[in-house]
Every structure is written in structure tokens, then in C-alpha cells.
Image (cartoon, rainbow, N blue to C red; front, side, top):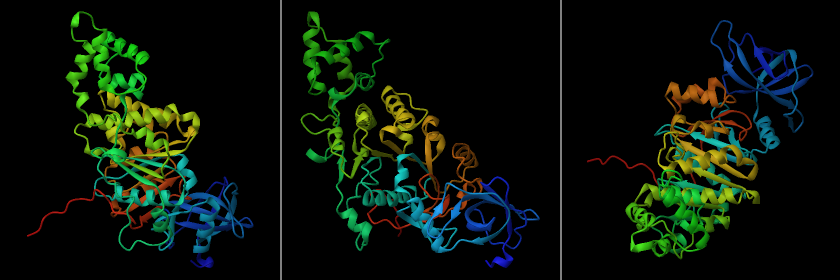
Length: 459
């Protein structure tokens, strides 16, 4: 846009700006602009464009432009400033200044420009949301590839649908620095039906007492006798597995009768679960070695309770070790399976409550969450409210969009409102992990998607 015909902006508070007459301007919500006024040039983001007469633009000031840097800690008020579209060089400066290194796609508002995320800001919790068919899981894979390739942050993926089990492979023809880096990373896939080192297992007697009770559906008051037996078992058994409790329970029972706790274990059938480690390695042992990525293929267990056992075992262990302050990103795909406000079984509630605790208190210990789901209402509000990053894909429900606007005030309302018209693979990124709120078309994956949709057979 020619500076002579540029709209004129003003800022009264040095943080936001207003253009009263934007008639004829091509700028829309999400556009980056350069405002020259008060003797300095400032980078700004258009957050809203009204279609009233006269047309108005509103937005936020990002920082003062220098020769090769943007001072995002300073901005100032001005009475009249010319507004011009941003150029590619300024976007490069923005990325360099903020540390945006992870190229995940192309910017839809600035056509052809790269969209990059800040790796350092994954030290905040992230909420990833999009309805079925939006490309949510595929796009998440693009971001995970970048994180695994270009950071030293260990990633643990709770994968209920086997969507990420092929992260250690490359698509035919995949090339470039990211592909080369991925080929060198230690990516481990643990499967429910895997054997030996590849098995996804938990160790009952390493779990905390409340977690053991949740596995056995024991209430400390309603089931006080059995719960107390379990308490005393902690003093006797320090290593081993669940089946070792059975003869010990029989040994302490007088008169040769079956011990109630032994009967409970048998009635629940937990001894038959394939999740128990026995002499094999447990998931906690593998994650403690801090591979670059660990994919927990949860979907292969014969009962859903076993998925919860794995999750609870690992989350408890990470929380117990939190003072070590060893960073890890916990990616929970289909997060409603573990984080729903409507869960009711003792085991499911124990998992969710631990995630709520990590969301509220884990950040300072290096326990960071990335939660992916179809609707915000499916995830406990105590978790969503702690998220400082948002990735939103296609979402047509007005109720859901209103809820997202309530939780994520840093995402411009006008950009949230674009979500119903997103095409597959398009997303809004907002929050600390992106230089400015951005509409993005994600790149192609370098690794195969493990759980892609099944096509309709044709004659």
C-alpha cells in the first residue's frame, strides 16, 4: 500500500491503535502493519475490522522497529501515524527477535510468508482443539516433528488411536534439515501388545497407595478393611508384582478363608491384565531415560482400564520426581479420554486429578502439557484455564467458540470467528508460542500418519 493513500492511525494509550476511516484499505483482522508516527516506526497487529461507515481498524502495538530488531518491551502513543503493510524482511526480524524457529506452515494473512512457533514457549501448557475432519491430528504431527527435530525437549505422547506410532519413520522423498534431524533422534514406541523393550507396561507395586486403591476400586472409608490390608502390604512388599500379593494375603488370613482383598483382585480380573510389567521394563523406566520422544500406543489393551493404569503410573512417577526439574512435554491426544469433567470411575478420576494438578502446579517443575481434543467442553475447566497457548482448527459450534473466547482472551475475537470457515489443515495459533496471533496453513508431514481415516470402498 502506498504511504500517500495509507489510512491514518492514532494511539491514546501506547498499547492499542485505532484507524477511524479505513475505507478502501485491504487490511483485515490478522494483518501485520507498520505504523509510522511520533518519530518512530512500530509493528502492529490488526485485530478487528468493522464494516461500518466509516470503516474502523483496531489492533495492538507489538513493539518499536529498529534496524534489525523489534523492541517488544516498548511502544508509545501517537496522534497520527501512517499505516503500511508489513514486508517480508520485517517478518524475518520479528521471528529472529522473538526466537520463532519452528516452521510449521505458511501464513494465510501474509500470503507466502512462513509461520513459525517459539520453541522456548512450549514451557507453557498448550490447548489444541478442532472438530473431527479438521486435520487436528495431522497438524499436531507437523508441530511434534519440529519440536523433536529442533529441540532437546523430551516428548511423551499418550496416543490412544495409534496416530503417532510412525514418528520414527520418514515418508519417501522426505528431505531437508528437519528430516535429517528426525532420522537421528531416539524415538521409541511402546505398544500394549509389544514384547520386551517394546512393551507398554506398568508395575503395580511401584504405584502410590491411592493409585493402587483406585486400580482395585477401594474406598478408604467404605472399604476400610480391605484398604487397611493394602496399607499393611506396603510395609511388607517393596518389589515384585500384583500376583505376589495373593499368597501373602492368604498367609495373613486366619481359618483358611479367602481374604476379602484377594477375592476383590480375582473378581476384578486384574491379574489377567496384560499391562503388568512382571520382569519386563515399566513405562516409567523408559521415560526416565529421557528419549527424544516416547510414543505410548494405548489403543491395543483389551480393557480401557489398562490405558488408565499406564497413564496414572507414569504421571504419578513424574510428579514424584518433580523436584528433579527435568523438563518433559506431555502430549495427550484425544484428551477427553483422560481429562473429561464427567469421568466417574476411581481410576479415571485419579488420572484426571493428577493432570489437573500438573496443569496448576507442574509448569515450574518442567512438566508441560499439550492437550488435543475436539471440543473444549470435553476437558476439565481446571486444565483449560491453565493453558497459555492455543491452536484452533475448524470449529463450527458457536457455543464452543464462545467458550474458547472466554478462556483465551489473548486470541482476537475476529480470528476466532474465522474458525468455521477453515479448510482442512488451517489453524489459528495464539498465545506465547507464536510471535503474534496468526492464521496458518500447516506444512506437509515428513513422517507417516499412523491412524489416517479409512476410505469408502468404490466399485
